[in-house]
Length: 388
Image (tube, one colour):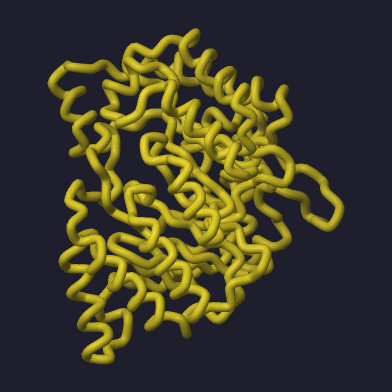
């Protein structure tokens, strides 16, 4: 079982909070898609496992000519064992969703739409420099449903400047009323060198109070649970049967291949990532093909040692509702690191921010964040990491 991620770095305009690699210049689309297809073809031996998920993210993949999406899918079908039960996700901006686009995506095999809504309040959307308004976001979801899409995810952001708890409650209520199957919600982060970060430094916006952001997160968890959603990862909620299979691969050591500028891969004990520059990426892939180079000469590669892999397992495992299987932790990393984990977890177990649950098939139990621990997750995970 494996996944493929394709990064599409094109955007019409850049949101003030975004620190992903993207560009507002789209004239290079054809050359870029050709380079991605070349990378897919040349790297096919590195991913022999059947492909169960494809995720086209960005950037704004919905800006692509639908023919480019089909070109990518045809390339993957030719070079990989793509399974019939494939989960095929494309990220979209509500402004780009039209009947014609949806029909083209459906013909290409896309069966999951992930939509960047962020909020249903027009004032906040304007501040974030989103292209759509709340009415357009609602219409876009309805269009997806009318065209047969039954696996729709929307993203929301909380802790926006001057956002009130009441505004957040209406955002959550609107999301639930749309009858989507999945929701991802993230606290606004002021990443260095973004427009948002500069605005805060210039006192043009004020960061939301931490207690207010925690109240928003608490409300979200309660409301979504009351409406049948499962909180299966810190930021992700899905109706039963609609957890994101692709994103779950990032949290359970499933190998995934990332193609495109700035895309990351994880295969075996090796992490790889491409340069975050379209022109350089195209040059790298051209050299990779023409000079028959090993891939590690045109990308950044690191082989994880046992301790780095352990740290990754802590961070990814504790993010999920399934938690850390302590027996598997010992099998994979040895008794020393399992005992180290429990030693560092002890204060949090005492405070009931971590808990060990006894579950069938897990003789040593499963280490999980408690409900209270969800709100302190970053600090808890940091405490359990191995530090030389």
